[in-house]
Image 1 (spheres, rainbow, N blue to C red):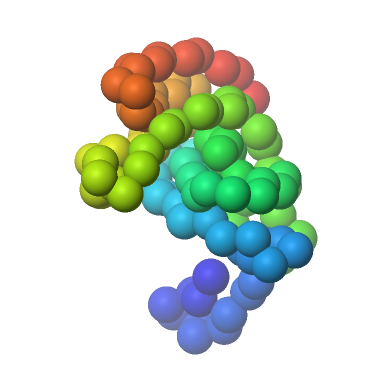
Image 2: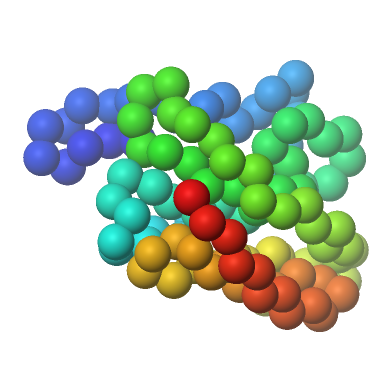
Length: 113
């Protein structure tokens, strides 16, 4: 993460644990929960702790990670596209989570902090 006002860079977590691969989407819509983002991660092959999950991540050094959900998105080369990737989003308070995965599943969950 790089702060735009100071240019300071902070590593939040290592995204290639044990030489695995992963991609992710970020949702920064929780405007009433500043300092947090929602991540949806995906990849194939060997998995490690951050793979195939939806979690909240605190935006500071040594961040807290709050695991919210696991998903089992399946895609192959023929149907791999942006729209087949898992996408999660949240409301402004970060108390409602929505996610879409493939096979097409739309889930809505409520949680409290």
